[in-house]
Image: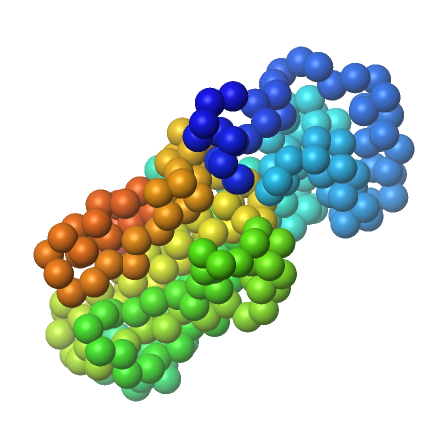
Amino acid sequence: MNDLEKIEGLSSKPDYEGVSGLSDSYRDYIQEVLPTQDQELIVSRIDELFSTQPPHAIDANPEVAELLGDSVEYFDSKYLEAPNDIEQAEIISDCMTSISGVDYQTWSSLSLEDKASVLQEIECVAAAIEHRPACRVEFKPIQQEYGHYNCRCSPEMTREQIVESLKGERVITISSEYLDSSFESYKEALNTVIHEGRHVYQEYNLYEREVHPSEGELRNWRMNEFYYKYQPGDDTWVGMKLYDMQPLETDANKFSIDVISKFLQKI
Protein backbone atom coordinates (compact mmCIF):
# COMPACT_ATOMS: atom_id res chain seq x y z
CA MET A 1 0.00 0.00 0.00
CA ASN A 2 1.48 3.38 -1.00
CA ASP A 3 1.43 6.56 1.09
CA LEU A 4 -1.73 7.90 -0.55
CA GLU A 5 -3.64 4.70 0.18
CA LYS A 6 -2.78 4.98 3.88
CA ILE A 7 -4.79 8.17 4.14
CA GLU A 8 -8.19 7.64 5.74
CA GLY A 9 -10.88 7.08 3.16
CA LEU A 10 -8.59 7.01 0.13
CA SER A 11 -8.21 3.27 -0.31
CA SER A 12 -10.99 0.88 -1.15
CA LYS A 13 -10.88 -2.89 -0.79
CA PRO A 14 -10.13 -4.10 -4.33
CA ASP A 15 -11.48 -7.61 -3.84
CA TYR A 16 -15.07 -6.46 -3.19
CA GLU A 17 -15.95 -6.42 -6.85
CA GLY A 18 -13.92 -9.50 -7.68
CA VAL A 19 -15.72 -12.12 -9.74
CA SER A 20 -14.52 -15.01 -7.62
CA GLY A 21 -13.79 -15.65 -3.96
CA LEU A 22 -17.18 -15.62 -2.26
CA SER A 23 -16.87 -18.56 0.12
CA ASP A 24 -19.64 -21.06 0.83
CA SER A 25 -20.00 -19.70 4.35
CA TYR A 26 -20.44 -16.16 2.98
CA ARG A 27 -23.04 -17.42 0.51
CA ASP A 28 -24.92 -19.25 3.26
CA TYR A 29 -24.77 -16.19 5.52
CA ILE A 30 -26.47 -14.06 2.85
CA GLN A 31 -28.91 -16.70 1.61
CA GLU A 32 -30.08 -17.36 5.16
CA VAL A 33 -31.78 -13.95 5.37
CA LEU A 34 -33.02 -13.53 1.79
CA PRO A 35 -36.38 -15.28 2.47
CA THR A 36 -37.14 -12.72 5.22
CA GLN A 37 -37.32 -9.93 2.58
CA ASP A 38 -36.10 -7.67 5.39
CA GLN A 39 -34.20 -5.01 3.45
CA GLU A 40 -32.29 -3.59 6.41
CA LEU A 41 -31.27 -7.03 7.66
CA ILE A 42 -30.05 -8.16 4.24
CA VAL A 43 -28.10 -4.94 3.67
CA SER A 44 -26.49 -5.04 7.12
CA ARG A 45 -25.44 -8.66 6.63
CA ILE A 46 -23.79 -7.94 3.28
CA ASP A 47 -22.09 -4.86 4.73
CA GLU A 48 -20.88 -6.93 7.68
CA LEU A 49 -19.22 -9.50 5.45
CA PHE A 50 -17.20 -6.99 3.45
CA SER A 51 -16.74 -4.35 6.17
CA THR A 52 -15.62 -1.56 3.84
CA GLN A 53 -15.83 2.08 4.88
CA PRO A 54 -17.98 3.43 3.44
CA PRO A 55 -19.88 0.27 2.48
CA HIS A 56 -20.25 -0.52 -1.20
CA ALA A 57 -23.45 -0.89 -3.20
CA ILE A 58 -24.80 -4.28 -2.20
CA ASP A 59 -24.88 -5.45 -5.82
CA ALA A 60 -21.34 -4.25 -6.69
CA ASN A 61 -19.95 -7.74 -6.16
CA PRO A 62 -21.18 -9.88 -9.11
CA GLU A 63 -21.59 -12.99 -6.95
CA VAL A 64 -23.67 -11.14 -4.37
CA ALA A 65 -25.73 -9.59 -7.18
CA GLU A 66 -26.37 -13.09 -8.51
CA LEU A 67 -27.59 -14.24 -5.09
CA LEU A 68 -29.93 -11.25 -4.82
CA GLY A 69 -31.31 -11.87 -8.30
CA ASP A 70 -34.49 -10.04 -9.21
CA SER A 71 -35.06 -9.04 -5.58
CA VAL A 72 -32.76 -6.02 -6.08
CA GLU A 73 -35.73 -4.32 -7.76
CA TYR A 74 -37.39 -4.05 -4.34
CA PHE A 75 -34.44 -2.46 -2.55
CA ASP A 76 -34.17 1.26 -1.97
CA SER A 77 -31.97 2.50 -4.82
CA LYS A 78 -29.55 4.16 -2.37
CA TYR A 79 -28.20 0.68 -1.59
CA LEU A 80 -27.63 -0.25 -5.24
CA GLU A 81 -25.00 0.65 -7.80
CA ALA A 82 -25.98 3.76 -9.76
CA PRO A 83 -26.00 4.03 -13.56
CA ASN A 84 -22.86 5.45 -15.15
CA ASP A 85 -22.63 9.19 -15.78
CA ILE A 86 -23.71 9.02 -19.43
CA GLU A 87 -26.83 7.05 -18.48
CA GLN A 88 -27.57 9.32 -15.51
CA ALA A 89 -27.38 12.46 -17.66
CA GLU A 90 -29.57 10.92 -20.33
CA ILE A 91 -32.25 9.68 -17.91
CA ILE A 92 -32.34 12.87 -15.82
CA SER A 93 -32.63 15.09 -18.90
CA ASP A 94 -35.41 12.85 -20.26
CA CYS A 95 -37.35 13.00 -16.99
CA MET A 96 -36.94 16.77 -16.75
CA THR A 97 -38.83 17.26 -20.03
CA SER A 98 -42.00 15.85 -18.45
CA ILE A 99 -41.95 18.16 -15.40
CA SER A 100 -44.68 20.80 -15.50
CA GLY A 101 -43.35 24.36 -15.66
CA VAL A 102 -39.80 23.42 -16.60
CA ASP A 103 -39.92 24.95 -20.10
CA TYR A 104 -38.62 28.51 -20.30
CA GLN A 105 -41.82 30.14 -21.53
CA THR A 106 -43.80 28.77 -18.58
CA TRP A 107 -40.95 29.20 -16.07
CA SER A 108 -40.53 32.92 -16.82
CA SER A 109 -44.10 33.62 -15.70
CA LEU A 110 -44.00 31.52 -12.51
CA SER A 111 -43.90 32.91 -8.98
CA LEU A 112 -40.80 32.34 -6.87
CA GLU A 113 -42.68 29.66 -4.91
CA ASP A 114 -43.69 27.82 -8.08
CA LYS A 115 -40.14 28.01 -9.45
CA ALA A 116 -38.91 26.42 -6.23
CA SER A 117 -41.47 23.63 -6.68
CA VAL A 118 -40.17 22.94 -10.20
CA LEU A 119 -36.58 22.78 -8.97
CA GLN A 120 -37.67 20.58 -6.05
CA GLU A 121 -39.19 18.08 -8.48
CA ILE A 122 -36.01 18.11 -10.58
CA GLU A 123 -33.93 17.44 -7.46
CA CYS A 124 -36.14 14.52 -6.38
CA VAL A 125 -35.96 12.99 -9.87
CA ALA A 126 -32.17 13.41 -10.03
CA ALA A 127 -31.69 11.96 -6.53
CA ALA A 128 -33.64 8.80 -7.40
CA ILE A 129 -31.63 8.28 -10.60
CA GLU A 130 -28.32 8.95 -8.83
CA HIS A 131 -29.21 6.51 -6.01
CA ARG A 132 -28.73 9.09 -3.25
CA PRO A 133 -30.87 10.94 -0.67
CA ALA A 134 -32.87 13.92 -1.93
CA CYS A 135 -32.47 17.48 -0.66
CA ARG A 136 -35.00 20.17 0.11
CA VAL A 137 -34.68 23.06 -2.36
CA GLU A 138 -35.14 26.63 -1.16
CA PHE A 139 -34.65 30.19 -2.44
CA LYS A 140 -32.80 32.76 -0.36
CA PRO A 141 -30.97 35.99 -1.18
CA ILE A 142 -27.29 35.06 -1.55
CA GLN A 143 -24.66 37.46 -2.81
CA GLN A 144 -21.90 36.52 -5.29
CA GLU A 145 -23.07 32.95 -6.02
CA TYR A 146 -25.97 31.18 -7.67
CA GLY A 147 -26.42 28.67 -4.88
CA HIS A 148 -24.90 26.09 -2.57
CA TYR A 149 -25.49 22.84 -0.72
CA ASN A 150 -25.38 22.86 3.07
CA CYS A 151 -22.49 20.41 3.35
CA ARG A 152 -21.79 19.59 6.99
CA CYS A 153 -18.19 18.46 6.45
CA SER A 154 -15.28 20.32 7.98
CA PRO A 155 -11.56 19.47 8.35
CA GLU A 156 -11.93 19.23 12.14
CA MET A 157 -14.59 16.50 12.02
CA THR A 158 -13.91 12.77 12.04
CA ARG A 159 -15.56 10.49 9.48
CA GLU A 160 -17.94 9.25 12.20
CA GLN A 161 -18.96 12.80 13.10
CA ILE A 162 -19.58 13.67 9.46
CA VAL A 163 -21.66 10.54 8.86
CA GLU A 164 -23.72 11.35 11.96
CA SER A 165 -24.24 14.95 10.83
CA LEU A 166 -25.47 13.76 7.43
CA LYS A 167 -28.51 12.21 9.09
CA GLY A 168 -30.01 15.70 9.27
CA GLU A 169 -31.90 17.50 6.54
CA ARG A 170 -30.03 18.21 3.34
CA VAL A 171 -30.77 21.58 1.72
CA ILE A 172 -29.87 23.06 -1.66
CA THR A 173 -30.20 26.84 -1.57
CA ILE A 174 -30.68 28.79 -4.81
CA SER A 175 -29.98 32.51 -4.75
CA SER A 176 -33.11 34.60 -5.32
CA GLU A 177 -30.83 37.58 -6.09
CA TYR A 178 -30.12 36.26 -9.56
CA LEU A 179 -33.60 35.11 -10.49
CA ASP A 180 -35.34 37.17 -13.12
CA SER A 181 -37.23 36.42 -16.32
CA SER A 182 -34.11 36.08 -18.48
CA PHE A 183 -33.16 32.84 -20.21
CA GLU A 184 -29.71 33.04 -18.60
CA SER A 185 -31.07 33.04 -15.05
CA TYR A 186 -33.43 30.21 -15.99
CA LYS A 187 -30.53 28.11 -17.27
CA GLU A 188 -28.39 28.94 -14.23
CA ALA A 189 -31.17 27.87 -11.84
CA LEU A 190 -31.48 24.50 -13.58
CA ASN A 191 -27.72 24.11 -13.74
CA THR A 192 -27.29 24.99 -10.07
CA VAL A 193 -29.77 22.43 -8.76
CA ILE A 194 -28.10 19.68 -10.86
CA HIS A 195 -24.59 20.87 -9.93
CA GLU A 196 -25.30 20.99 -6.19
CA GLY A 197 -27.10 17.65 -6.40
CA ARG A 198 -23.94 16.18 -7.90
CA HIS A 199 -22.03 17.37 -4.82
CA VAL A 200 -24.57 15.52 -2.67
CA TYR A 201 -23.90 12.43 -4.80
CA GLN A 202 -20.13 12.82 -4.32
CA GLU A 203 -20.57 13.24 -0.58
CA TYR A 204 -22.85 10.19 -0.37
CA ASN A 205 -20.19 8.09 -2.10
CA LEU A 206 -17.36 9.42 0.04
CA TYR A 207 -19.04 9.05 3.43
CA GLU A 208 -22.12 6.84 3.31
CA ARG A 209 -22.12 4.27 0.49
CA GLU A 210 -20.14 3.83 -2.71
CA VAL A 211 -22.73 3.50 -5.45
CA HIS A 212 -20.78 5.23 -8.23
CA PRO A 213 -19.63 2.65 -10.81
CA SER A 214 -16.30 4.31 -11.73
CA GLU A 215 -13.46 3.50 -9.32
CA GLY A 216 -11.17 5.96 -11.13
CA GLU A 217 -13.52 8.86 -10.49
CA LEU A 218 -14.08 7.76 -6.90
CA ARG A 219 -10.33 7.79 -6.34
CA ASN A 220 -10.08 11.34 -7.69
CA TRP A 221 -12.85 12.44 -5.32
CA ARG A 222 -11.12 10.76 -2.37
CA MET A 223 -7.82 12.45 -3.18
CA ASN A 224 -9.57 15.84 -3.37
CA GLU A 225 -11.50 15.33 -0.14
CA PHE A 226 -8.99 13.45 2.04
CA TYR A 227 -5.52 14.21 0.65
CA TYR A 228 -5.41 17.58 -1.11
CA LYS A 229 -8.50 18.72 0.85
CA TYR A 230 -11.41 20.61 -0.67
CA GLN A 231 -10.48 24.19 -1.60
CA PRO A 232 -13.31 26.65 -0.80
CA GLY A 233 -11.73 29.34 -2.97
CA ASP A 234 -11.56 33.09 -2.42
CA ASP A 235 -11.92 36.35 -4.37
CA THR A 236 -8.43 36.15 -5.90
CA TRP A 237 -7.77 34.80 -9.41
CA VAL A 238 -5.56 32.03 -8.00
CA GLY A 239 -8.13 31.14 -5.34
CA MET A 240 -10.89 30.80 -7.91
CA LYS A 241 -8.70 28.69 -10.20
CA LEU A 242 -7.81 26.34 -7.34
CA TYR A 243 -11.51 26.05 -6.59
CA ASP A 244 -12.62 25.46 -10.18
CA MET A 245 -9.87 22.98 -11.08
CA GLN A 246 -10.25 20.55 -8.18
CA PRO A 247 -11.78 17.16 -9.14
CA LEU A 248 -14.97 17.58 -7.09
CA GLU A 249 -15.79 20.85 -8.87
CA THR A 250 -14.72 19.86 -12.38
CA ASP A 251 -16.85 16.73 -12.04
CA ALA A 252 -19.92 18.64 -10.81
CA ASN A 253 -19.48 21.25 -13.55
CA LYS A 254 -19.15 18.67 -16.31
CA PHE A 255 -22.12 16.64 -15.09
CA SER A 256 -24.49 19.60 -14.75
CA ILE A 257 -23.47 21.01 -18.14
CA ASP A 258 -24.06 17.62 -19.77
CA VAL A 259 -27.51 17.25 -18.17
CA ILE A 260 -28.73 20.76 -19.02
CA SER A 261 -27.31 20.63 -22.56
CA LYS A 262 -29.14 17.36 -23.21
CA PHE A 263 -32.31 18.74 -21.64
CA LEU A 264 -32.31 21.92 -23.74
CA GLN A 265 -31.88 19.85 -26.88
CA LYS A 266 -34.95 17.79 -26.00
CA ILE A 267 -37.50 20.50 -25.27
